[in-house]
Figure 1 (tube, rainbow, N blue to C red):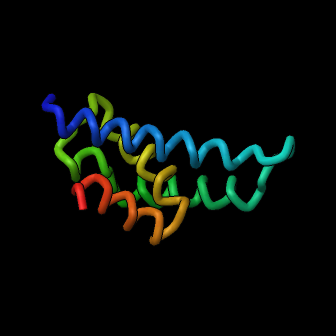
Figure 2 (figure 1 turned 90 degrees about the vertical axis):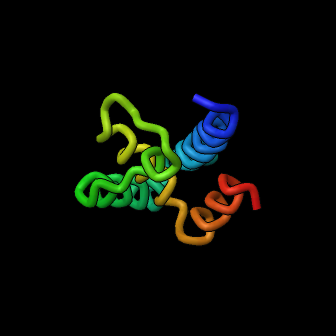
Length: 90
C-alpha cells in the first residue's frame, strides 16, 4: 500500500463514519437516512459497485467494499462527486 492509498482509506473511513452518525440524530432514529442507507447498500451489492476497487484497494471480502460504498452513496450525488474530487486531489 502506498501513501496515496492510505490517504484515500482515511477519506473513505471519515465519509463512512459521518454517514453512519446521521442515522441517530438528536437522540432518535432518522428513518429517512436509514432508508437511504439500506437502499444504497442493497443497490451497490447487487450491482457489485465497490469504490475501494475503483481506487485500487482490494479488500479480502469484496462484498464488504460494496456495503461500505453503499454507505457513501447514500449521501447522494453531490457528496459522492465532492468525495471523488478529494480522492483525486482536485
